Image 1 (cartoon, rainbow over the protein chains, first blue to last red):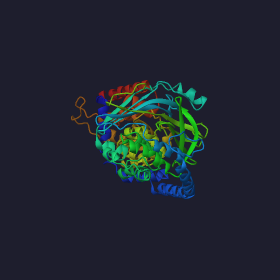
Image 2: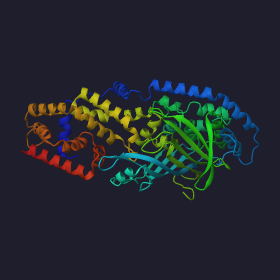
Image 3: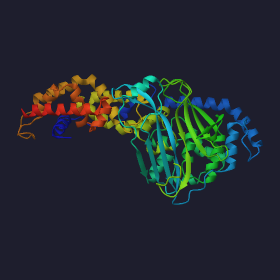
Image 4: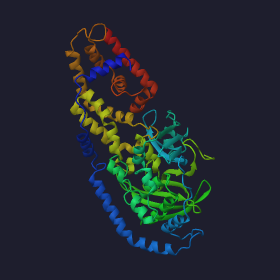
Length: 346
Length: 180
């Protein structure tokens, strides 16, 4: 800022009004939004939806639970096994990861391909898929490091128009982000509980489901820091799976997911050449009409290792047909000795 | 929706909050709390408190409606929000003009000013009134909102080189007016 800028600033600051009133201003924003962000209206609509879903699928839960108990352990997963059966089988097989010793870190990393939207140099909005390489280290001491690098070029476009408009976007994409936190408060905010509380989570699936999945993001509501109006138990489960929890808890998380009434199985597929069993959870995203979305988890049928996940919009967006995966994640996890160690092949 | 899983919640950048707000609208409140002071102050300094309340609320309402179009390669949403604020502020341009005219007419020429023993604010206000809006907006985003050239480019949707040339032109014109 040079002298002229400073003078301009001082001029405009002359007789500056007092600071804005947060709550009054937020109320004004909510009034304009109509269906307010975080208002009781949306919460009530969601509760109603959840109640209806729970009632409607209660019988199915019972039916799904009984045959699963009859399934023999240790063999291949039958093609006709339900999502609940698949998850219980994987839970019974135990964790694919060892416990993380003190002084070590759980590394999670992979790629994510996401739909990015914004204006080009001419101010015209376009959509394009970007691919990012993400890495997350979570230590037994509560340290968390996250690193994200975006590939230099777009990996796809919803339409030819988007491809054309993207040529007029000249800002670099490949700016790396790298953040590290050693704060227990930050850990608690981001993961919903302290690491020691996480290490004490129950290993009985129903109890674990009550502790983690029944009210995902309750802590975020308490802290009033956003995130979590829609209860997406898959995401809550991913939080736990990304942290250095006990192996018994890690395995039990699949058992906990199996207790959810609305998880369903999709056809098997592969992730980076590895066979994967797919389970999905459907939910409604508030803030848009007809906004059904599937959150899909892809798991190694032999070890239960988390291989991938994706969000699929069941409505048309950005010129993409309904049923398009808006983002795709791949995962690889390992125990590493330092906050900078990377497993081979990453 | 661009983010999921713990990575997004570990970082909590504005981009991630906006992405999450598609699925969890409550997240938007966090973004609001993070930036409302900055946006409001920019508007209040230009148009006064009452108009700022209105324009600031409009800015965040627009941001909420348009959050699906946000360019998630920009971690910091402040330039984007201020760009929206500039658009909403145009409705109050008359207030800004009146305020500048008032300042141009009433600021006394005392020797306390920093430039050659002359309070430059009257001339400065007149100079700002004379600036082309396309040159004034980038300058105000720099001087009042502390945005960088690159951030101003994002806010106004123009190339960074254009931002530089417009700001330089505005500074040059203002300097000439003050030094007359």
